[in-house]
Image 1: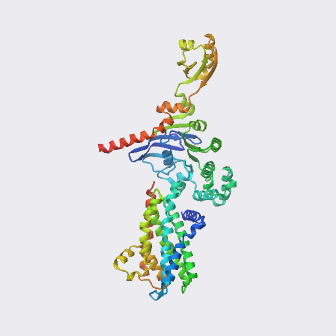
Image 2: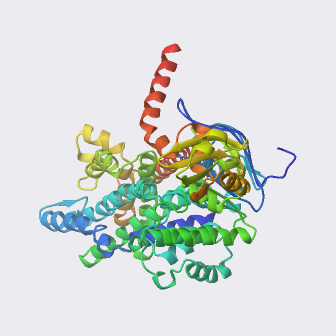
Image 3: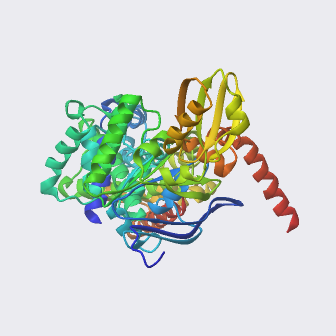
Length: 334
Length: 248
């Protein structure tokens, strides 16, 4: 890992809150120019990991380097080279958009002669020019989100951290934010984002790390992660199901029949579909409809963790109870 | 770093002066004290050869900064609650720069109140023999004491999560500071237990210094007043910086 040049390099990084380990010995290398996604349910440790990388939280152990600067040794250098968009509001709601941007420019030492121009550019980019002098507390959620993003870009960071960039946004605004992220990336910016939306990770990210309970449990491109499942599903609607149930082609791993449909589980379904149709024709099966379903990241998450993202979130109460028990046991054994 | 501190201080003042009505809070109460007690007691009371009103003005200047300075620190908690603190923490500045900027901004705002009170006292008949020197000297004392008080507030607010507990806790500190500071009565004639508490109160020294500047005589040595004030401010500044550095 050390031999490769990583824009963000993480080695055995951990964060403990008392007895609870929010991030457990994570290793990671994010390459230059990548859109890298951290996917997982709430409480998986994504935000904690991001907070350590952006130097807003102290690490407990391990190493993390951003743009060549170690986060605990040279936090100022790290902060200068990154832009951070937090999950929750970090705007000064008592100030106007213009004042917020001005303040950011000053804090990040944008040259004074460029400040006015940069503020106007940022306002335009966010589509907020006509509301520039309105206090942020009067903004809608989408307006605030856009302002946060353009603010983080003012000092031209090499790396952009986005913590749940589209949380709580309407679909239209969400699309716009995605477009913006892709555009920034196409100009060479390295982007690392957290999300618990499967489609967002799938849509945006080159590589995705799936996090659950403080650990990265799988890492790869969306397609790679899905190929781990070895199971696309071809669903055939037909009256004559017997041939499939009795003598399916060899490449079909399993066959199920349910409600007038046959479900074939197999690898690379799109390449095998012709053969399936051929098989049906030979056996005089009249196909009424046929669909191919590739696994979603949701299925991937299920595969690696044994539970869905939603379940993981519902489960949090239980996890808390378990942690509490463990902590108590730890105390007793001392 | 210096430029950053002033930017941060400017932001504080900008926010605080946005709501114009809030500025009233900076001096209206003090003005009531000054008018009611000053005019009420002056006909029957003179202290050390000056009217009670004249005696009272430096005292009111001293206690006027107490509330905005100390409670101004609650903005650190609201910055945290509303999320803006994160923007500060991810900026390439040291945490101590952030806290210094806030302290300076809050104390400048409190000083604004002090200047208004001083201005109104002149209108009400307060006079200084050599105001060109005395007014800047008074303002310096106000800034210094206010900075100390703000830092005391920030030190306490640094690890607090809600403003209500801060207000509650603050009252226990601010009211003794307010009443037992020699603002309303001369300490040298007060019973020993009042004196004992008052001499532990940094505002006592601030007010004594301002009496020395405006009336020509305090009852403590001027150098002692300044030394105590400086020590108080520096110690509070260090504690506030340390507390903020440690907070997550």
